[in-house]
Image (cartoon, rainbow, N blue to C red; front, side, top):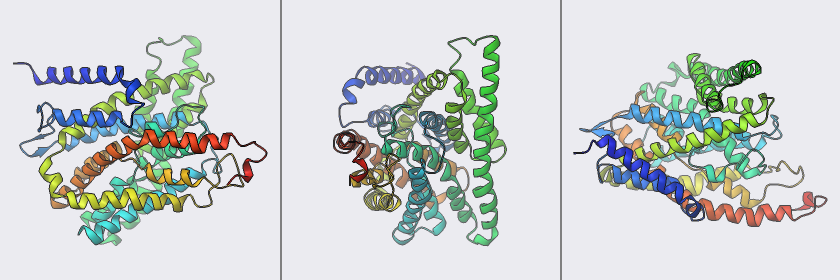
Length: 432
């Protein structure tokens, strides 16, 4: 009789080999790696071989899911920061501020209204559901993000920066929903929420995201002058920045996700040798893809047919309204009168604006927030309802966004990007 752990290692090794060797074909198809991982996870779960079991005797190991998802997110948001080399000013980051400051609250409030009016949830439960599902995913959305540090595309930049930031900035609303679940008298905790969870945690996250990597890079560069680090070990500096920034920020009750994203931006600009952050980015991306495999396998393994059927009607309502109305309309509103970085006279192409609305991919960040809520007061019928709506939404997002990403981005490159490139610089401001 073989040990289940050994069988798990065999299956994961085989999966990695197959998707790696077939990656040249997979990237050409309307098919995502995440969808493959999800199907294999289902195969390894209770309806298949039963090799991965986060549920034993009806006890769900939410803590393991939380820790795995947490690690994946901090690695991913650091990678998002490393990819971005645009100047740090409001004009350049205008699209990001709109997606975070307008689109995310619209999504959260829209979902909360749906939950309150149609799903029988309280406002606290609705806001918590909205906060869990509002963040777009930096892990599963690699195909629509910046391809490298030289990529200046407005759509890819907006989706990359949004994915890096809203996994952190949804946290205040998660706390809001958790507080409301525990005490429906907002006067008892609202002031604390404003001071601690909104202002302090965000400010601490930004401050630590600047301070910690600056110190580490300074130490690294000064030690390297005296004796160079082993080439095989050098990329571990990036991992140390991620872990130290995250942990030290959490020590002071700041948002670690936010700090790690800011750290990526700081590291990209702090090294004298520009090749150093590029090497770290390459290593981080490889690690992120490996962790993505594990997380999506876990998601597939925890799916149960009967609960998904029981909440199918509610899940379908949320998915249709979120994917086809709330996110697209919120994206359209958020990008009204928005000028691309390359021009101050024309507006974003309508196709670009709709793509901002469509590519609201849900994934690992939502899994993390759900597991976090489980450990902080979400329980009973509300927990089951929110959980299965969340799982189903992520599964559908992996499928529909994964299948549509390749053809839509090809259409975008062919009809919007190339169209703009073909117009002479002297007339580009007159376009559209």
